[in-house]
Image 1 (cartoon, rainbow, N blue to C red):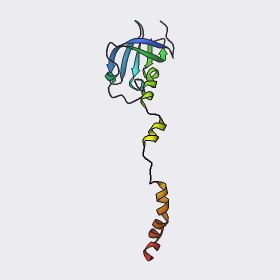
Image 2: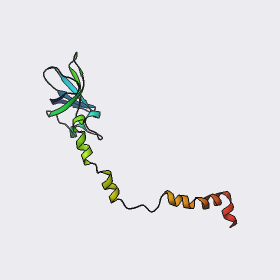
Image 3: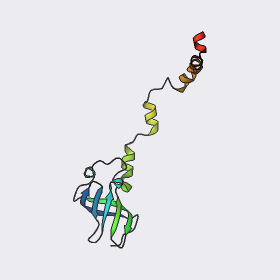
Length: 124
């Protein structure tokens, strides 16, 4: 079968290494899902995402027709799953208490600190 960059295919996980997972797409074509293409988040252990023998849907991000090797991505298909777990910005802000200190309080004390630093505060 001829593959193209951007194509979504299914393959079988044939090997797992610390740097990625090897996937067989057909009899003559294999590919690697590099650890950076497993998930949007941090990946400590690839086997938490795929297991040997799993059938996975992947996106081809590069394909070399001469060697029959493909660079594959899981996160290109699953990136919405990670984003959907994040809270909308408005909801987070609504749940935080209102801050009563900040740059305003620093600005209010600034003249006093300048006077003390220059020695004028000691004369009062």
